[in-house]
Length: 277
Image 1 (cartoon, rainbow, N blue to C red):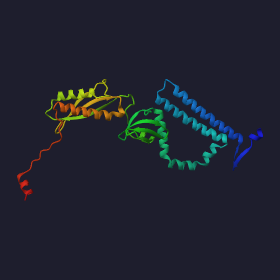
Image 2 (cartoon, helix red, strand yellow):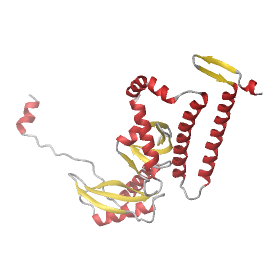
Image 3 (cartoon, rainbow, N blue to C red):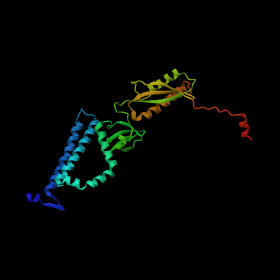
């Protein structure tokens, strides 16, 4: 049996692979796979961790185990890691320069998983676009846009650019709708109407309560803003649209004018005569 296990499968230079070594390597890979699977189950069964924390912990431990298993696996096969690293140092340096963006993405992925500033199911704004975070990997992050399209973002884009996390500390966020009316309007009546409409708009929270601000004196109108809170952050633009329609109808019913910009042009008499010459 011992002679059978010591049979040489193939040999390349100084490297030889025996049947015994191959069996040990395969068993090692199976054991590592089982450990990764068991750890995932244990992590996701925990009631103390949130879903995002479970995801991050599982990813980090998985990659650590794979890295250690890769090194141990090479040792099992008979490779000398120190000799390999010394022999291919120049190649590794060249690869480092050529793949620096990819390495940057990997480091950014580690940062995102460890610091917890970005988690799965978070609603984020990147480059003026709104996304829901679906999955955070070591090199890329998968997000879902409002057009129901999946976008793969390099992790470095999320660490070096300005990112607004709408759900960082709460699932409730505040939004507003601009409204302009004519100077002849009664400001108290306008503010009361806007507040009533905001309260009646579906998916707007009663607490905190919507409120209205008199924002500005414009060239041809008075500016107001209706502020409201909602948990439907990803669909906030739909709520704004519904509120704008309701505001337009409510102001129209009360005879409150929503003016458009107007300009008065004064022309000299001589200029008019010159035009018709």
